[in-house]
Every structure is written in structure tokens, then in C-alpha cells.
Length: 301
Length: 307
Image (cartoon, rainbow over the protein chains, first blue to last red):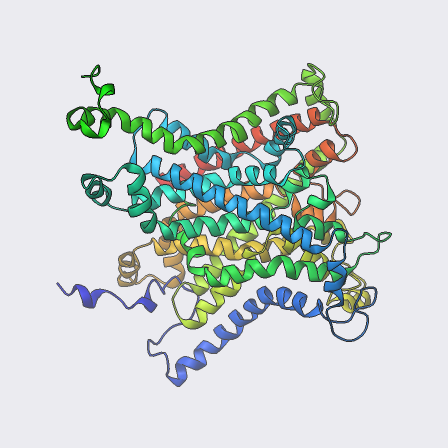
């Protein structure tokens, strides 16, 4: 009867379980602020622990350090080392961008079509195929990469960035197929049935009606695919031999200890910055979509 | 009807279309699922079958299939001088990483679960490291832990310790890296689980006069069990397959004390021994162990949920 009143305000939700002391609801009272102080100091300290390594790396990549290309004064010396390393960082960035974009496009197309099939159609072997797709999660990375190395050699995709992108797409399929399936399932069937009555085929329904509706799901899938592909280390490590075709993480990792075992820490820092910056920017811009990937229950399966 | 249908363009024959649509929809469904099916078949099922064959064959890295070599591969996999050590180390690492990540993930989630501007900032700062790749994070900490370039370089020299110099230090330094990289990820999963607990349950607990700790122990934890089960399975699986963090940060050292099972597979296959057959045998052993461990975990958790 007093349903609206009984519902606690949002900030109150399950505050019992919270460690945060919150005896008073009035947030701006002097006593309230005083009681909150230890909480702020404590949580602020934890936040610093999480942010410090990133900030320190960014700062020291332009700071002077003996044994690097930036020995005195501040500047971009370490980035110059990086630019001139072997085939040049431009080549490695290009390789990484190629692998990442191809993985994202393949993942989006395959999981869009697959999610549509699983959500809207009945066909023989549907459940088997879906379970087989999810089962990819259960199999260790290394267990698959060794036979994939042999198989890709057989079909002429050895040492190929396309091969790496195909493999990375496969590893993305459990999450993205699941995500797209539930995205489609959350759209009422009446929507596509109405379009069907108006003469649309299943194909035009997909593109005109459903793709706009599942766009948030697509963004989440694309973001996860990009982050995974851009950062992946093990697949290119095993599948790529040619140094000109290495992806960025591999190149930066190999850059350490090139000169008689002496590690150029400055260049490594610069490399970490180049690696991390796109990920952090994307994360900050698409934070909501990143979190949705979890909220969707895609990890609850 | 089926005789006349092909003679007339499909869109002009409404009555047979209805029949075709029910039978045709399954076909169309398959067409949409086809790319998924091809990827699963050629990049997952086929390699999986091949790894079983490789594990039973003499298969040098460059020579290809040299014929049957069944029990020998498994025998030399198990008798590899690093096999037992790597298994024990991986298990130790997995237990520690899982306890730390589940505990800290839940703790952080409880700290930030209400929405306010400050807690939104906290959530974002805990989450940012998880946008980095594990390889990038390992490289970052490689420099951070360095006795030459790291911010603690002078401190380590003055106090005479190193981050990666002894087996124990290397293990804990790597664990810190993993917590830094993954705590936000597990916090997010815990937050999702916490949101699924209805307010009414807490309300009831409060009316019953239960203390904060009692509520946590007897309301939050039991209702969070599905989330705890999922995160534990994820964390155990991920930790058992640890590779990058040790490959980049410790390179298996000092004194080969931090070699994980996946690292052993990699080095047998591509570094030195170049024996894909033995590496395949090791992979099959890891796969079997993982399946068994996950089944045990899921059974254990579902039994506890029933209680």
C-alpha cells in the first residue's frame, strides 16, 4: 500500500552489508563528515595504490634515467628509441591495429549472426552448437594453440596476422555469442513479427529492426574483442616468428635486453604507455558498456 | 504443390510459402549459425582432436608427424624434470591467487557498492588496471620492480632486498601484480551479485535486529553463493593457466622456482626441446586436470547451495 515510501532511497541499498560507517542519513552534517573521514582516507589510499603504477610509468617514461636514451632533462628520448627499434614501432602498431580490427569485425559479424540464430530460430543441433561454443572457455589456451600452430601451417597461414586474428576471434566467441544471444532475447518477438507481416525477410528484419536494438550489446562485444586482441600475448608469441610481423605486446616484451642483456627500462616504459593508452582511453569512454558486459550476466552462464 | 512451386517465383505463391516458412526457417537458422559453426569446427573441435593425436605421436616441431608414440610421450611428459615442481608451484600460486582475489574482490565491492560520486571514482580507479593487458601489466611491473629503474630502487638497495630475487619474493611480487590487474574485475562481478540480492531481505534482517556482521555472514554470503561459485571457478581456471605474468616478469626464475605448467608446455614445444608430441601430452594432462577440478568445484558449490 505504501509501496513508494517503503522503497529505500538508492544510496541506502543494502548498506547493512557495507563496511562503510553510515549511522546518520543526513550526509552533510558535521558529525557525518567527521565519521566519514577514516573511510575517505582508507579508500583514497587504496585508489592511490591502483593508480600509482600507471601514473608513475607515464611520468618516468619522459623522465631522465641513466642507461636510456633520455639521460638528462625531460623529453621524448625513450619514445625515439621505441620509434627506431628494429622495424620501427609504427610497423608494430600497424600489425596490432590490423589484428585488433580484423578480430573486432569478425567477432561482431559472427556473433551478430550467431546470436540471431540462437535467439530467434529453431534448428537441429542448436543446443549442441551453443554448448560447443561455450565449451571453448573450458579448454586451456595452450592446449589449443599448439595444434592450431600445426593446423595454420598446413593451410598456409603460418606466421600470418590473419591467422592470429582468426584464432583470437575463436577465443572471443563464447562471450560474444552468449552476449548477443541474450541481447536478441531481450527484444520482444512482436517487433520482428510485425516487420515480417510488413513483408520483411529475416535478413532485412535483422538489419533494419534488430541491429539498432542490439547496438549496446554490439558495442560491448566489440570493446571486449578489441581489448583482448590488442593485448593478447600468447597467440602471437606462438603463431608469429617473423620479427616484422610481431604485434605490439610481443615487440615491447622482446625489446628488453636487446643490447647484451642490458635492459632499456626507459624504452620499456614508453612501450607500456603506448600499449596502455588506447585501452585506458577506450575504457574511460565506454565504461558503461564495459560494465554492461558483466551486468548482462554473460559471466553467470 | 511441391511440383508446381518451382515453376512459379516464390514471392507470388502465398499459400505454399507458409509451409515453406516453417520448414525453411530451420534452414535459415542454420545459415545464420553457419559462421559460428565453421569457427567452432575448424578452430576449436579440429585442433582439440589434433592435440589428442599429437599427444600420442612422435611429432618434432619442424619434422611433423613421425608416427605412433603413445605411452612414451606421456611418460616423458611426467618424467620431465620440471613437471612435478611446476605442478606444485602452479597449485600453490592458484590457491593464493584465488584466496586473495576473491577476498579482495568482495571487500572492494562492499566498500563501493552504494552509489555516490566518490564511490564512482573509486570503482573506476579499481577497474582501470583491468583494461590493460596482462602482458602490458607484467611489463609495467617488470620496470616497477627493477632494482635499477624502479621507484623503490634506492629503498631495495638500502634495505638489501629484491622484488624478484628469491623464490618467495618473486611469487608474492607476481601475486601483487595479479591482484592489481584483476581485483577490479572481481569487484565488478561481486557488485553484480550483490545487486541481485533484494533489499527486502536486508530489511527483514534489520527488523530482526541482526548485527552488521550477522547480516553479512548469514544473509549476504549465502545469497552471494552463485556469484562466489562463478568467480572461484573463473579465478582457479585462470590461475592454473598462468603464463604471461611469469614468462615476462620472472622468466621462471630465480632458479626455475616459478615455472608454471603452461610455461613448461611452451618451453617443451618451442624452446629447446621442440617436441610437440610431449607438449601435446602435457596439454592433454592439463585439460583433463582442469575438467576434473572444475567438475569438483561445481559439484561442491551446488551441494552447498542446496544446504
